[in-house]
Image (cartoon, rainbow, N blue to C red):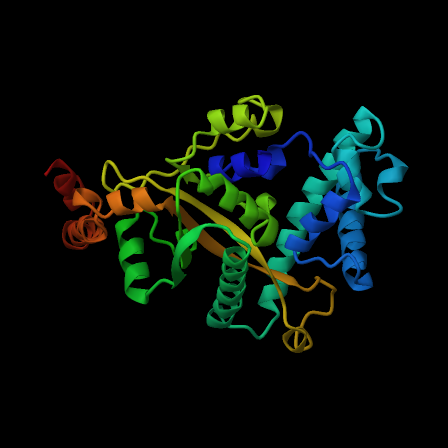
Length: 335
């Protein structure tokens, strides 16, 4: 429930006050979706390195005195301490701090690793596409009711149009160079598929904050159905407002979110890295996921919601900005 709520509200994992993992049997799958193999000594060494660097940061930069049991032994125990399964209450708080710092350090170092690899953006896109396609294929084989699946790399023309239409025309603002669309049978399938994706493809801690839009899943009703308070503390900080796409029709409905998906670097590519420092074996690729049920998908193709109408509104904005700049934007808005 918390995974689904976090994905659909688009909050930041750094604001979470606790986790909810009671055994290593829950921790290991979470690490697996991060592309860590707990049976591989090199991956476990990498997690310990991240723990050590996070502990140094907390001690040196913030002068925290960390409980010694958190920085020794099996690093997977940190998740149990952060969940209150092990240790005292203050130990849980320090474990959460460590995991948050590890999360950020891992992300930063993965980005740095990517800069030292001989991988083009197109090649990273191919790795991502293969991973997403394999995951959806497996989910369909397991019986998840995904009736349509499409997506991949956006065309250069679409990216240019989107950037020209946006007030921030910097390319870093585009989160959907890679975008995938999943259509499920009925609206009740949406949270089931979202949860499955967090366990197989996109870790919930790498959902991009402030980029989630949920028009279809009633989270309060879903929480009650699962015996969870609608304002549970774990999600209390997930208050980032979802972005509004001004070019969509007024009755367009969708579940949409952006994730940084971890990718395991192929060994032959990793061998060519130029960095001397060990930065792990994982890089990240941004990906937008769009989910909708079949009935809503049909409605979304009618009237002003039709994709061509969406593109026409977007093109009109671009032409106004190209021809008359800010003045044209205000004039086009009045019309």
